[in-house]
Amino acid sequence: MKNCRIVCAHKYIPERKIDNDEMSRMVDTSDEWIVSRTGIKERHISTGENTSYMAGEVLKGLIEKSGISPLDIDLLIVATISPDYLTPSTACLVQHIAGAKNAFAFDVNAACSGFVYALSTAEKFISSGKYKTAAVIGADILSKMIDFTDRSTCVLFGDGAGGVLLQACEENHYLSEDMNSCGDKAMALYGGHMPVDTVFSKEQPNMGKYIKMNGREIFDFTLKEVPESIKRALSKAGLDLKDIDYIVPHQANARIVNYMAKKLSIDVSRFFINIDQYGNTTAASIPIALSDMLEEGKVEIGSGKKLALVGFGGGLTWGTVIIKI
Image: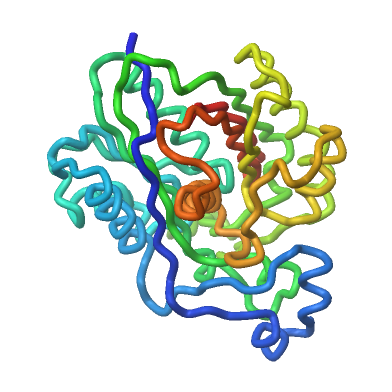
């Protein structure tokens, strides 16, 4: 059985930036209202680059940083809920963009938990001993699923992509995980409805393509379940909260992170937060955060620092992965 480690991380952020003042000219809101409720100050929005393009730029960046050949990649997973097409998969498009011809490529759909789900999946393939190098990318363009007249959602989301390159190794860097789903609460967050609309079907309601969210239900669910997931993952790894250098949460809402810190009885400084710059980038938020942490020198590859990567979102899905960087 093989182990795996993160070799490098990379991100792609669209150039177009929309701050809260500009958002307030589009919908009834204000900078004070958005910051006080979410911690978001600005977000980046695609002006035409699609999900596969952003993810492709991430994969090309990972290849350049690691110094490997695209042909060395034998597994490619893209986590997204905003693909270019239902088929082909975004991962297959990205494989072509970056020339990773030998990669076994597919998508994972787990919304804001997508990256940790994909990371967990890649780790299993590498641990089988049959795969040596995997690229795991989270990429979403929520702007194409957002109603920009709906203040409850349009101020929250941004576009972006991020990813990591994993390689097989002898030392254990993937310390534990705790992965969960709750379909009972699936409709608390949904989008992109595809009704059966054919000459053979009876008339059905079309719930539309836009993201709809019961914010209070998501908030309460997250604070109930996610801290417990972190504790379970730590227990499986034989670790305590004091052993973790950073908790890297999905960047959904700064208030959620603050309440999560209180529930865990730790200082919020133990969490890495960059939601102010990007908004909620769904599956991309954790790998973007990892890329920023490496760029800012908060962690270094090979440092041995321990991180808890925590995803939660639509499905409902949530999970924690404990890694040594």
